[in-house]
Length: 399
Image (cartoon, rainbow, N blue to C red; front, side, top):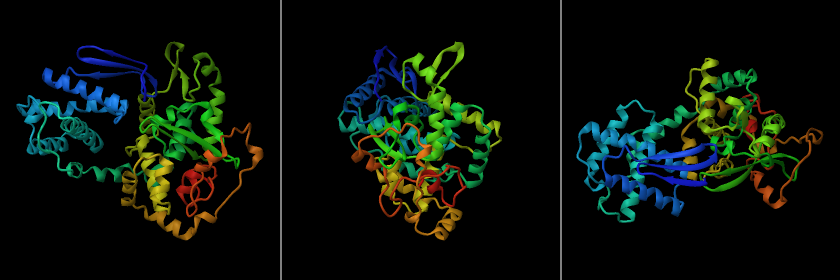
């Protein structure tokens, strides 16, 4: 993520941006207990902006997540004037505190990561006032049970059926399209809200492909998508054409908001819409946009795709996080997969008459969108209805 302007004030830095996170990212330093911490945190942000080791969005998340640690320090009446005052025991006490807060394990994990990131950064660059020896042993995340959260992130078939049924009746075309694309592609919500009209195109075999640009890891990838994704996006693009012209943007997820002002959909508004959608349709299970990503990745792995193929499709830099999907098993999907047989033999050609005004990119580049032999030799194609076919992977990638 890039920013257009940085306004530095004493206790707050404001990054002027124009993306799915909104128009402004504010970094607050007023909650820090003394001037030393304020200067250190500002230096930490500056360093990472120059080094580009951590994205601006992640730095922003770390900024407000660090509040959990300093709240703990205040409540515990601990005398921590600099990070060098921290001990291994203090970290364990903080972890125990997080487990008792009632926060989600993901929030606990980010709170721990924010603290660990700045402490280890200061140690590596030998900042004054940082520990001289390690106070993290590498087992912190297992102690707060982060790995167990993957079980809760996987959406069961029954809940997915409820979501699909509700989606069919959803009147908000903007949100409906967004949810369809999230379900069928497993892409990050931030990636999807950055989509522009020319990111939807056809490959050299007349299959629909979506170009995904990731601000998280500064990369781009081409993924095959379902007919449902293709036509949903096409309809939305036509529906919002006048809004884009008036706004002077190519962003797909755009709408007319309050006071007749044209706005680009932000992550916060999208998450609020998802929460309302779940409540309105009486869907009891906790579901986030990222849940769909974990569900798709898990189903892909349990249906025979390799970790490396899933890693490429989901745009993960490391296979480490992808490997976690192997720990989640869906017996129903496994049984159906075994009865189906070798999925690489299942192919279906798209009726070229359905494709309107095809756009293409360089053939060599788009070949990367086709999956390797052994899983799917060509981009998959179907109607995209979850659980309608025998395997969610066929629903998601479409052969």
